[in-house]
Length: 462
Ligand code: ARG
Image (cartoon, rainbow, N blue to C red; front, side):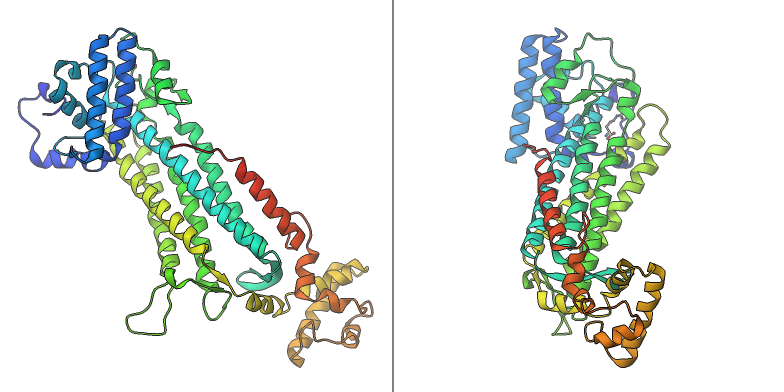
């Protein structure tokens, strides 16, 4: 039976019913729904709106329903949505007391409350999972602080960098992501319960009781806004989208660096796949799939933004569309983060190959220009001189390291013996000692800073 059947002469037609229902997906909210209803019933009894006895019966009935669902003894089916399911089940178990649960409440403030409880728990889990990834990346960085690799711009070798600096860069991104969820939680963690259908309630409710029972940091301050606000869903999905953007970039690097053309990383066999026809293939499917899944998470963000833009105050059924995207994004992002973190722990770095590559292709050219500039040659002039040196090397089949001092001097009198040290890839990386730069010291400081900021993130129990 529908919760609202009284006003209608005929039941909802089967096709409309199937179209309208949300139980097939909002059953995920069962725990949040029961938790919020227990708090609501407790408040109703404490405020004398229902009797203490009804309050106890409702609470015990709801707790038993929760236990039965979790044991697998009660299958969630046959109703319009999770709210109808729980309420009908309660009424069938405890009778009239169950029919009093919905006093001073509407499904509109109920669903908003349930979904915020769910999203809060999910965002907290995201922070925990992201912390593990950041810790993993800083561990890899710490292990490789003595190694160098080429740094790229335009996917062309640019300057030698410390390996740790590279992994620190991704750790920075995922640390920002963790902080973005923490920040979004300030706006997720607000209780709409007590807003009624749209305009509040005439019953003498005490919203601080439910707020405290449900552990909400704040309560909403406008009932019209509270029942129709889904900004928190958009924010959650935006935070998810940036996680995917960062993961997708890491995937791209992983795919390139593990190719034979680069040969920088060796992917673990346990996280690689083969080809049904080409026996030699070792494919980076995990990275490709994570990169590919980025699109669907972005899609969910666009969907909610588009859904909420046309919703007049206050609640409209459009808002039922808020859930499936969030559930799918949640699963997608968590799965991607977990599998990627596990895979990263087993990636082997071919440090020799990276070191050789770091020195190839004139990566120390900027250092040679800086060498001249530091000795009084205007930087633009120095840039031109080194450009000519590179051309000379290309013609003669030389590198900046195999050029003799005499050859350097032919290009500028300013060059001295010490230029031959400057052009070494390791000295080049280590010379960029500015905060956050590519030197070993800066990379070590980067790890320390990341770890201390990681510690400052909150720890959540649920
Ligand atoms: N299934 C609905 C949703 O997800 C629950 C709220 C229904 N409220 C209403 N007035 N029909 O939004």
